[in-house]
Length: 400
Ligand SMILES: Cc1ncc(COP(=O)(O)O)c(C=O)c1O
Picture: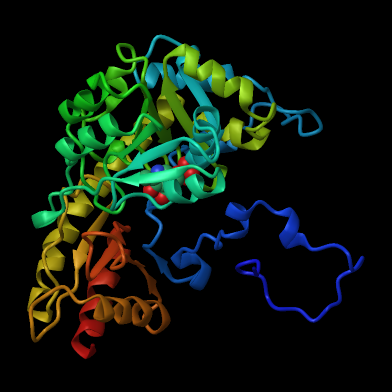
């Protein structure tokens, strides 16, 4: 079996008795490289990866006032208690023992799966359409996926609780349930009452992970953090990559009761958070920076509303109204076929490529995801970026 993503080579292998394919675990050999729009397009107006278009929320006065020498010749603090305490305060949890830090949510996700699931035996439940890394992580860890799709009719993107209950009751090997709220690519919140129903299911003895990468764009009272003190079987994942505008420092967070947090800490590499990332994260969690974060989030929420309105002007060019709840920093919009009026994935894909290659605006094609036929996912940009997007999308749609 070839190694996916590797360019063919005629270079002879030495020693001749070595075959890497015979050493690598079959589930790993099966992996294709994770591909995103950024693999193909790296420049222009980047509205593909749901980053914070307004930049990092660290006031420049704080960035400039580097209080002392960053001891780069030393290993970083393995515990990072100061960052954890600030996160606990922000999310109204008792203390740092409720917080775990990883290299992005992606590391947190991988660790969670590794500590809970025995490879080749246990399973996790996901609810498509959802964030792609849950499947990648499942494959890497040789953990099978049980898929219970969201109810997608009319862009509802809500949990199918009866089907989830049946799946969890009938399969005791399911160790974890991954919920994404607000969802990616759905942009839709899952009500806290639905999350509670899954947490309370007596037939399910595993952990419910609620991925809240976008929760700060959804407004007050929407986070499952409020349930962490009560439910030992809940783990909330958050990140500094979105609302804080710090995707580059790779800081992901797990919020759960101390036993699970301790297990994660016992498993992680000792110095997983680098000193520069830790310094920037601590600054981003100061009161001054939090005020700036909230201000930028408010600006993006207002821009999201304007972008929704502006996209409506393209309906005459067969762009449907955005679907989903619009609770994150992106929108999901179906492209229609001008003749049939039905969602049209090939047309959406052409628009995606033309926008990147001819118009310099990178968005994301999501038409292959369950319930997202014909869909483009567009990150809310700055005011100028949103205006450019609308203008260039109008031009592109006129010709495709
Ligand atoms: C739902 C969801 N979870 C997690 C992540 C990744 O977050 P991080 O940058 O912390 O790894 C993303 C990034 O797009 C996401 O959409």
